[in-house]
Length: 448
Image (cartoon, rainbow, N blue to C red; front, side, top):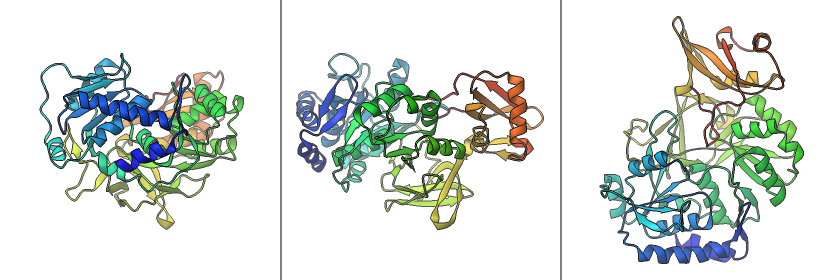
């Protein structure tokens, strides 16, 4: 851990974090680390205890995260501000201490009520003297899973990064594996981060223009919203050199739209899971959704069309869920369905749990969405399955039209466009016109 603190100190006056109302240098982060060390020392936190840091990107939040790791404690970053959901995460993580940076001075305080018993996994990690990190699944299909990482191992995976004079947007949340990957990569390399106060396309585009952001990590859902907003036309995005995308499959037609809108930008697909960490990847090209997991710390295997991973940075286990998604020999069954191509490349085509079963015929929502997004009448869409008494399920879609159009006319044009492009059972039977598709705060589509 000392190596990362040393790099932060060496970065000195290099800008670290730029926000709409404030900015901080790496020297300011180093000073905040000293202050937080004193706060932690003054508390009564015992070795191996679990401490939640509630807030978004700030010098204080990052300092707490690093100091907790340095002290061999278990850190629980929580970006969510909904009280019920925060309480749910505190309970699932068996959190003993809280630093709430969204309320008051962000002092260290014990969680009220009976002291929770530590989980066996946390006990074993504490006995080894190593730091922990608890992350949560999105919880879109139930209670979020609490995952325990060996934080020291995760941090060590960034040691090989070299200094780079870049300005990068930190788009994904403070408690998301992708957001933490961006943060730790920046800290290890002395990169300047720009943090939006809202993930609204015009705001993000304005920050890119103002701070000359060179790298934007985002999701396909957000990138489509950026195109729909026309912010890419009204703001100067000429500083952008790289846009990385991940967290969900990229429709081919959307990728082509992005290439037309941002022809000088390199588009790179990333891949990772909360369970295994973010893997180094290689995209076939900016025009292709083919990627290769090119990481010496990650093993890959495709079983019945599903991608399995085994990595050095994968979790020690879940605190509130069984390990059925892991094999006895440590392979994580990601649930991501892939197509294999030459040269070790893969194309992620969807999630196993999102497959639509139409009378025994399987439909991938992403395939249908890519065809629908070819239509000039459709700006965005989300395909999902609805129950049907005869076929089990039918294909349905939420559609965001471009301009005014009657539903009956849109249905007819969808049928005409899909004819010859999709098998008949894949064509949406039910369309709903909406102002925006359903997606969560991590800008991933939430399918019904």
